[in-house]
Image (cartoon, rainbow, N blue to C red; front, side, top):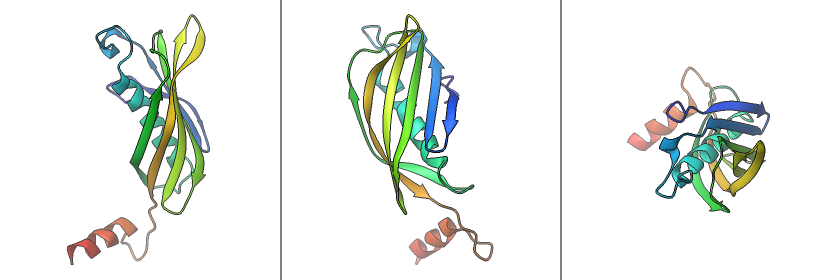
Length: 139
């Protein structure tokens, strides 16, 4: 997010919005925001939204990502939103949306979903669950 200048502009349990000022380097050949920029905002918003529902020390990893581009993104600012729709034992399902601010009004440019793998840290005898899994894989 540092590369995009993204910042969390809204944070609550299961909801994260990340905004970034639009700039010429985000543009593709026709002057619209590149799909990779929009996908990055959506992916990060879904990941942080999932993290907001998990115990401290947990981590997340995208498993599946689907983003439908509804209209070209143009405007002075971009916003990616992730909303957790369901948290299971190992997977979270999130709704994602990307908007562009045009003349002070937010316009939806992309919408989709993301499945996130939840790595919940649990300390047992000083060894984390991730370290135990790694040890099992070495056998």
